[in-house]
Image (cartoon, rainbow, N blue to C red):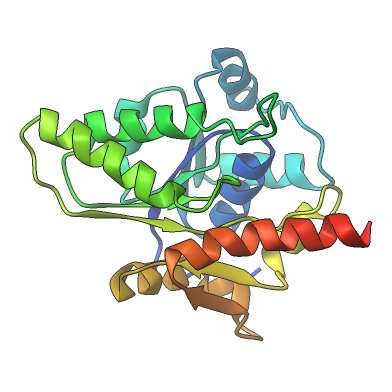
Length: 228
C-alpha cells in the first residue's frame, strides 16, 4: 500500500465493525490512529492483540499497525480528544422498536467531545444516521462549549461508510465511492487529504453538502434492500 505523505492524528470513536476497519485502514496508509471505546473488556482485548470481530485480513492488519505504533486503543476521551484534530464518530445506531434510529451513542459521543475539546477539531459522522444528524451533533458540541464559556471553531461533516462484511478491507482500500458531505470547503478539503491514498488511480470522491451525504447513505441502503 502507498502511505500518505501528510500524516494526521485521527480519533475513531467506537471500536466496532466500522470503527476497527476504518481505523486499521487509516493506520495502514500512514496516519496515527487512536480507536476509542467505552467497553473496557474490548479495549483490553485489542491492546492484547485479540480482535473481537472477524473480518478476513483485519487481525493481521491491526497487529501490524499496532507493532508499527500507528494504531492504538483507549477508553479515555481525554486522551483521544486532546491528541486528534480529526474525530470520526463510528458508534452503533441500532433501530428502535418503532423503526427509528437510536442516536443515544452518537449524542453521547458528541457531548463527551464538547466537554473536552479545547482547540479546533473536525468531527466526522461515519455512523449510519438520519438526515440532519450532523447539525444535531454540532448543536450538542456547541452547547457543551458554551457551558465552559469557550468559543472554539469546529465543524461537523458526514462521511458515510459503504462496507460489505467479508470484503470490508477491499471496500476500504479500493472504494467504489467516497462520499464527503460538508458545507465548508475547508472541511471537505481536509477529508479529501485523508482519503487521498485511497484514490491514487481513480478519483472516486463525491463531495456534496452535509444533508445530501446523509441522504445518500439511506438511498444506497434502500437500493440494496430492493435489489436483495
